[in-house]
Amino acid sequence: MNHESVVHEDLSGENAGIRIVRITRPAVRNALNLTTKALLVQELSDADADANVRAIVLTGDAGVFVAGTDLKEMFTFRPTDHLTYEPGRVFSVLDTLGTPVIAAVEGYALGGGCELAMACDLVVAGASAKFGQPEIRVGLIPGAGGLSRLVQRAGRARALRMVLTGEPVDAMTAQQLGIVSDVVADGATTEAAIAIAATIVKQPPLSIRSIRAVARHAENAPLATAIELERTSFQLLFDTADHSEGIAAFLDKRTPTYEGK
Image (cartoon, rainbow, N blue to C red; front, side, top):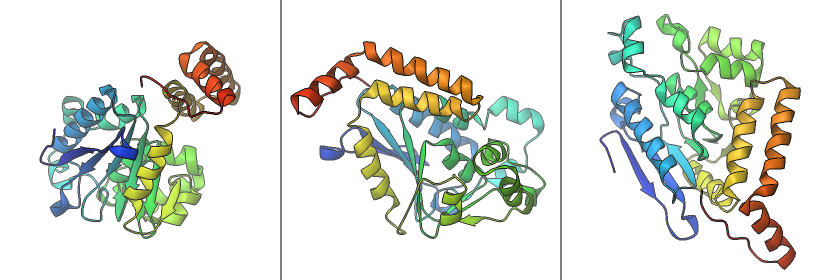
C-alpha cells in the first residue's frame, strides 16, 4: 500500500525478497512529521510480517534522505505530547525488527534523519551526503537515540564534537565514526543498497536474525555477556533446518535453498 508520504515497492527477479520503503515529502526535504513516522511504523511492521520480504531498503526522495524532524509541527509540542503521540516509536520499531534494514542516504540525514539512519542495520551513503545532530541550535538535544548511538559508535569526545556544535560531517567522516558502512557515488546509493540486500537475502534466515540480535545486544552489553549470547545462539542454530541445508549444500557442491524468513 502506498501513502502520501511513505511508499513501498517490492522488487522481483534476481532482487526478489527486497522491499524499498521510500519517504517522499520533497517539498520539506522529507522532514519527519507525526503522520510520516506513523506510516513508517506501519510500513516497516508490515514488511517484517510479510514472509516474502527478506530485506528492506529505506531511502528518501529527490536527492535527500531526511533533513530532520518537522519543526513547524514540533514547535507546538508540549512534554506530554511526546507520551501521547509516541513520535519516537519508529526508532524503537527498527530496533526490534527481524528483517534487516539498509538505509540508502543521499543528501541530508540530519536530526531525526541521522537518528533514523543510525537505527538501521547498515547505511549506504552518497559521497556528498551530510550527517548531523543539530538539535542544540533550536534549544534541544537528540531525543531518539542520536546522542547515545553516537557515543557508542564514535566515542564520547567525537560524539560531543558533533552534538555540542550541531555541525554536520561528510560521508567519509561518518564512515570513520561508525555511522556509515559504505560510501558510494552520489545517485548510486539505492542501487548499492539493493546489491547488498540481494546478497543478504540469499543467506539462511535464522542466521540473519541471530546475527542481528546478537549485534544489537553486543552494542550495549559487557563483552563477556555478549560472547555468551553469541555462543548460545551459535549452538542453537545446530538444531535448525537452515544449518542442515547449508551443510548439505556445501558437501553436495550446490546452491542451498532456504525456507521461511
